[in-house]
Length: 119
Image (cartoon, rainbow, N blue to C red; front, side):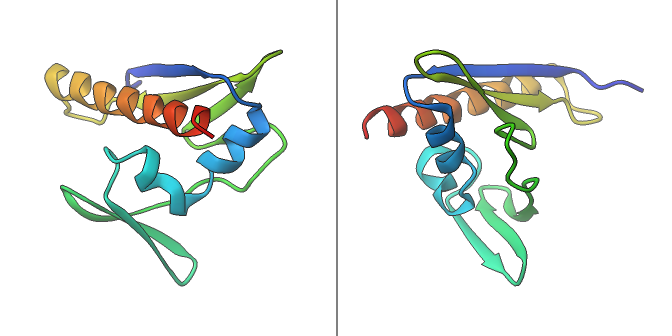
């Protein structure tokens, strides 16, 4: 069974490598993605985030030359880049909850833009 995906992006007026470097630093997540959680913690080699729904683990793929980390990527252009997050509908998720998740992701990506463009 295929699940629905939605690509949520925001153009950022900063170099792609700078956006990737900042966004892929797990410790910075609460500053630009408060919808994900209020704090992050590394325990051993695992990362955890404290959210309104409790504590949960998360992982990024290894840093790479393509500026991709699950489920987000940074796409360079001549004068900046676009940060794009792919949101997947979880099994059993209703339309209202999926829209709410999409809105939270959009707010977080906008937060990333605001933090980086203020630098």
